[in-house]
Image 1 (cartoon, rainbow, N blue to C red):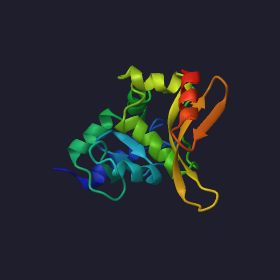
Image 2 (cartoon, rainbow, N blue to C red):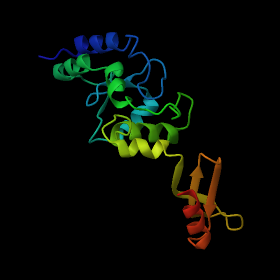
Image 3 (cartoon, one colour):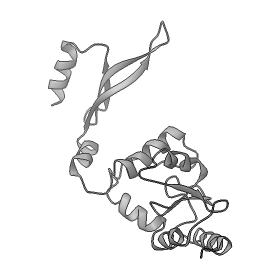
Image 4 (tube, helix red, strand yellow):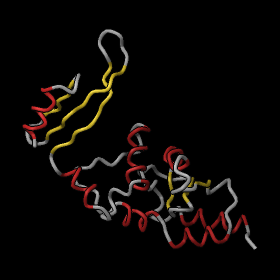
Length: 182
């Protein structure tokens, strides 16, 4: 039979351990939430993104919610250090890891890259090559001068010549630029 007070006490002791006393995703001190599917302790801000990923992460408050014995046992076998050793195994040295004070968008994209897309586990080399190829192309949203509406723009970001080029149309200049970088 699950004892709510006993399980709460166990979780509060676990969150005091050096590897669990900071959010697994942004490093904020004293996390009050935990993902019982991933086995990590997270802050209230990062817990919001975890809630948006119900197939991957399930969130509970370590202070307010009821914790079943089996969930507490699972948390005992995991923790931030073990999870980060797996999910952050191959984070490129130059990749920015969000901090406590960073905006929600940075944290959201970090969490999605880490758990949803599993970009840093080393399971797929194609994801890693995209980060270290020196060239990145994609779409960005640029605010217009006159009408202040956001418009899609193709871009090329080049590490070799430290440039970001974006194009208003997919025309010959885009193709020439793309050929130049390839």
